[in-house]
Amino acid sequence: MKQDKPISVLMFPWLGYGHISPFLELANKLSQRNFTIHLCSTQANVTPIREKQYSSSSIKLLELPLLTTNLPPHQHTTNGLPPHLMDTLKQAFDSSTPQFTKILKTLKPDLLIYDFLHPWAPLAASQLNIPAVEFISSSSTMTAYMWHALLKKPKGIEFPFSSTIYYRDYEMASIERSKEIIPVEKIEADKNRVGQSFVLSNHIVLIKSFNEIEGKYINYITSLTGKKIVPVGPLVQEPTPDDVNSDLIKWLNTKDKRSTVFVSFGSEYFLSEEDLLEIAYGLESSKVNFIWPLRFAKEEVDIEEALPKGFVNRVVERGRVFKGWAPQAKILEHSSIGGFVSHCGWSSIMESMKYGIPIIAMPMHLDQPMNSRLIVEEVGMAVEVVRDGEGKLHWKEVADVINHVVVDEGGELVRKKANHMKEIIRFKGDEEIDQVAKELEMLLNS
Image 1 (cartoon, rainbow, N blue to C red):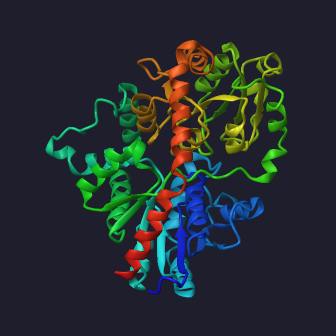
Image 2 (cartoon, rainbow, N blue to C red):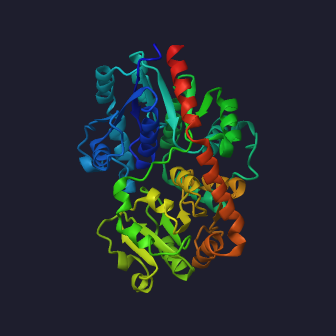
Image 3 (tube, rainbow, N blue to C red):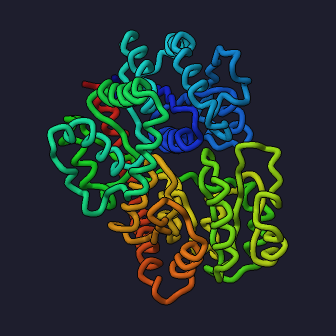
């Protein structure tokens, strides 16, 4: 392939915003380096991207139809999807192989970049002689732990980083309880699809990370699997112009520097009633202002009824609490923000690093506990709100950790570590993307 000819890439993320967003950012970066990008997803995901104009003119959006009568089109996304419908969405997605193959045949891309949950995508590409590369948008830490468990644990070899990267007892208990509910066949099927997606990647695997924070985990994945792991950097989405005029930003403009926390647990997790109340009491008892967008599994939930009686009125001067979405990147960038109460989703952590915001870590499930251990134990830019032995949150612990991270003198080191990460990312620029572009060119020329 000639170097001067633009490389045509089809990107195909899983249907969650936490996956689409890094794919979109990678697309934006590559489109500035002699790549033409098509990104494929369902109408429910493509429409908001078009409306927000997140993508550059060199990125084309393609709609993948899901032929199912079990879910209406607006639920062809994990964003706000009730948990009990997730398997239905996965089944519909897996059944879209013919539609996806048709897109591949029509587009004839030079390369497919796909996600971790659909091995049928690289298989379809292989049948058409199209190289395919996996892009993992979760942390190298969690990926290393997962591959260790899949390949080494049966041989009795301990995870080499277990002194800092581990599950707490109550997290392990929660995992075991979930295994009792989920059929063994489904657990094994999910393991197989994740493993197969990785194995089918041609020569290299891209991962959303950078060596300064996860170099040893990146190397460990390679040692376990034989695949070259290529970090793509933090890939933080830039705030859109519309975000500047947000009422929330205007409200933040009235607050003192570093006096406010942003509270968010992601677009796909719904707090339990118990956690919601403890977090509310913790915020009320803290010494800081806060912005807290809330999501509920049922849209009809009344926010004032869900929160402690009188809470909204009591915090009206220092808290913005509402149902829906908030411009997270723009909020974290604001000088009034001094902390991020976060579930420790990987993209949220990357945003905190870019803007130098220390994290009050409240991991909920999946990869979040591992991500939390990394930024608390190794990076040092976070403090975790630790639950009791039964896995219950307590409002006093919530308030104490918020105050420590944002206000108290004892949290100065955490704040300095967060600012240090900001400087590292600023200094690095897009050096990983330049290497990614070279790796992809070499792959296609080999």
